[in-house]
Length: 350
View 1 (cartoon, rainbow, N blue to C red):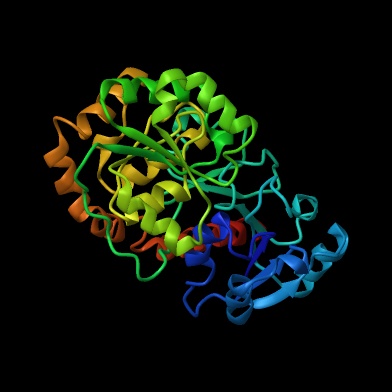
View 2 (cartoon, rainbow, N blue to C red; view 1 turned 30 degrees about the vertical axis):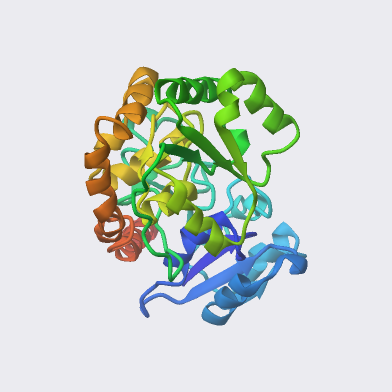
């Protein structure tokens, strides 16, 4: 019996990542969903989870009451999908209501709490040098998985001046990233940069204009749109640019699904390495760069001297993602990890 605790059983980027696992288990697992979200946030995605899981609305439960509920459900493996984000119930996990406890996916960072028996990651996202003083790291084929929306045709490489894009939250984008983007635009005459997120207004927009200077005239702030239209927007993009302080996650996956590669610069912190994890699993490490200089050089090259190569990559990028461990065999790998953790616990209690 596996129980998932989250405040994001709804249309949310975190749910897009964990849904393929939570809803994809084999019949050897009985799956419970403990929703900590307020009723007003429920939507069609919530209904999809509620229809498939043994459902528990626990938003008004105290940590102790939730722990008692988990024990009464006789959960073997309890999985945290929120970490320190909204709706988390880490207080409950600290009372150890289940024999095995794991944190994963929702916000892929270790909690630092010894009550967790595993943190799901991978060797790219969490290198050996970073595995010190935290809960045990359990390697999966990739730190994230993906279930794409239906009916989204692949975006073909367009004619005309190149368009770079980042559809990430402005909080992930600092001045060093903006300066790199400004240099890329300077190096590619007539190119444009499309930024798309509902938070690009007020001080965030002003910061872009101020830091990028004259090149800000070639920045397009795209409005928020329904999700299907959002995906179609990639049809106007040649190459995605990843922030290199906090990389994209779902944005990187969505771009790849639409046939748009992302140039990414992984840093020393795990949350800067999600895109690198994805592109390693896809066997497209040519989009992972080593430093800021290569980030600029490669972004320029892909839309100029390497444009034909970019076109060839785009033709197969969706299929490469689909065939990669990001999407193929991922649930099996998770279930194998659960079995290993469970067997370890069984050996220790004998």
